[in-house]
Image (cartoon, rainbow, N blue to C red; front, side, top):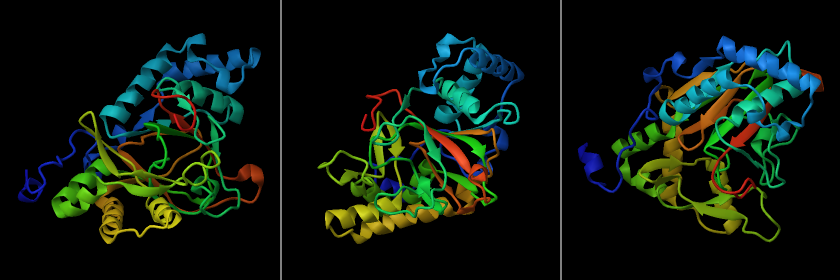
Length: 326
């Protein structure tokens, strides 16, 4: 342990494969091609569903012969929980399957990781990520816009899911580049560079809930960025929700808290600490939402409605109820 870290013995460094820098990671650590036998099972699955239709959210993987897919998704789970923390599955054949069929496959594969849960207050289990023409605001979420989405985890203001998924149906004409960064690495960098800032990140902040709550409920929640759970460090992050949270609560955002939040943002943005990539139609991305932050550049769509960038998101969590608040 360094001399600086020794000054804060209550804050131990994060450890394990989830602590990485860009040069530590190979593409093969996160880009996982579908095995041929799994794709063959998927072909048979789609043929069965064409003859015997079932609503997507009623599909149960145990009703179908998907042993090869189950084995592949076990590898995906290991990558998320014991590896670099994100995986891109490459890829489903978009030329042979409809959007609805691709979504059904995605639903079944995702259920092999954990149980799909609501990702909005109205209870939606599958969520279309596409530009609606809106702009980010107190009650408008960034996933409904084409604006840049800076470093964040999903739904840190609530009961966040351990795993989030994105099925890529169509990409943008330009932009929309993705990046992921290990928040555990950022934790350790802060412990070395400025442990006082890291200590502040273990204390609560006010988080704007973006109106995703019952009428009359509190408009903000109070959570830290970093917390320990059973010896493991869990993190949540999205800085603009915190600035808005303090505004909604009518409280002054302390200078140390702002510095800590901004410094962590800058650490994740350093090229050595994140991995950029482009997504392609038919790929599926899964991210460990407790260890990795992600971001997306602004994008430009093609003209027609059917040509717009279109992803389908899913939240996966086995604990608690399936409702938005768990």
